[in-house]
Length: 149
Image (cartoon, rainbow, N blue to C red; front, side):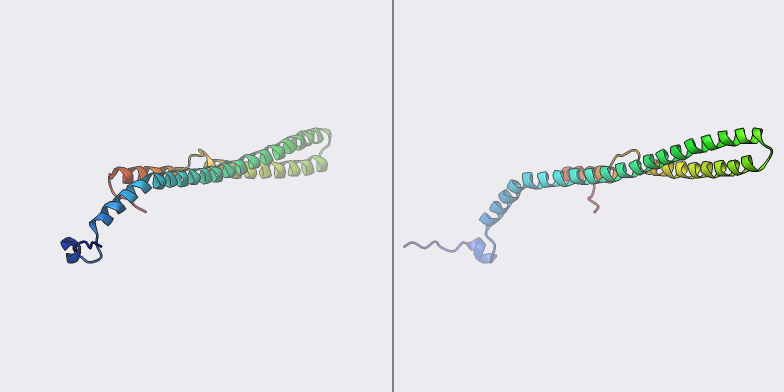
């Protein structure tokens, strides 16, 4: 049975073993690829979620444009009928058709403006927050600047 003499460095600093420090550094270096892989996966997931949100917003805008086009189509036929009735008779029929046509056109204008605002909000579908986050991660990895989160 052989016993090793106590290490003077370890005796001076209880609870610390320099071999443990080297092992933990090597362990951290070994974990680095997994950490980077996890970071990349998380960034890709954030980009995907942001792109889906923007595309949904743009899709709603396109749907509102389609609704505006449908109402504009009906308004056009009503206005054509208004012109025909206006020429054919003197007053009541064309006046009522004109009121309906103007109401349909107002609906088409409102839907068109709502669709335009939705499309502007969703286009371009570039995930800005995710791109900024990736840039911050690259800077932190390089050690440039400071990391804000």
